[in-house]
Image (cartoon, rainbow, N blue to C red; front, side, top):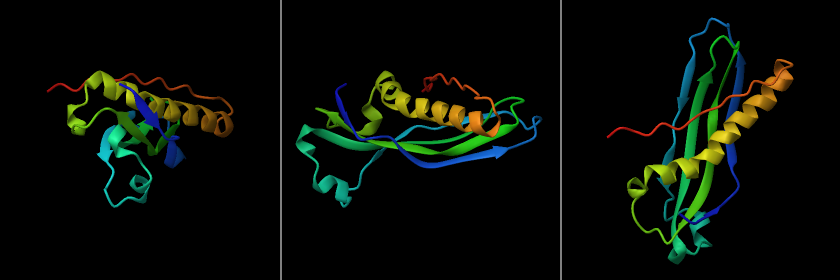
Length: 133
């Protein structure tokens, strides 16, 4: 699937020191949101090339026995070239490819923040899991 992508945006990122005994959590959601026709972004866009969506990725992660938790939201506007269907018609493999750069941003931000906050960078490695219908 061919795309035109805007830069990834960090809408929110929050780091907390927590007890190492806090229950581990890995909650990362990925959704494709249709941009409203009233959005000023669409005024300059060439919609004849394909639909434009925003990939929104809210997350809450507390790695096991790590002593920290991170949460926030990462997003990116993408145009799916020659795609004029509904977001739910996008193949699961294509969704994984579209969202992977955002997931990598979460991994990178977490590593960089923990390198400063804990004096050691913590490398997270998330893998996509297909939804079972």
